[in-house]
Length: 346
Image (tube, rainbow, N blue to C red; front, side, top):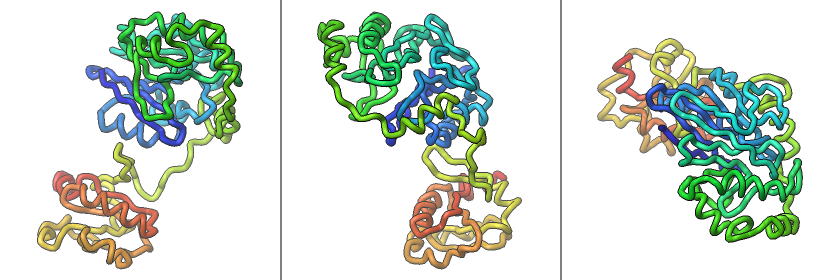
């Protein structure tokens, strides 16, 4: 199984990619709206087909990417039936089994943070994706959005702590940079629900907490009741001046084929050194040479009347040129994927 743990620094949210190497099918758990380009880039680079998006609950601190991922990939959306959200393809109940070819997840209802909280457990009980029910050395709050501390205690102890001690715990959030835990660790060391705490200990602890409401709650909750669909029902605008793909490294790229077909409408900036440019990409309009080592000092020589595409031998140095140009105020910039090495194969 292919497994990746991804992170959104704004909301401290973990998104999980699980995929089957044989079939190439993939699923995502708790994707974040603003991270769609990153997630799509990873799927493409790993040659995976997204079939399913699951949310552990209706989040209050970020907008889910479920709806927009469905528009872009045709995947299905799965969420607890108890949430009652729109645009859901698979309304999940406790005891369901859901997944893709080669990856099967048990659905366990773990309410208490919200009514619709679910924990997804890998079929061999080696991994549990606990959403906000159980965090690393913590748990989800229970003071709003159908929260119920007693219910959360029984969800954790009755659905998660009964898993094997070595079952890895992967939560929806962590605010201290911790990435995973285990059932045994949390049973012993969790300061709220571990170490022999009983229901009264836990409920009084949770009721004594005073936490501010999540900053994005007014935006996130209504959107998540639509599975992340914007209020106008439209896919957000994307750059339309080129056929741009954002790599998993965050670099905007275009393929050489697109450059050949659209070259008069762009400026090509070749950042190779002078002794490298004996090999040319061919007869092209609007081609200029400024070595990468000189670009910071000479960026004003790059025309601003057209989008700029950067080029080098392999596409590595030219990707750095993107950052230099953006810092200098160039908005429409992209790297030519693979540089001259890819160009030769076109």
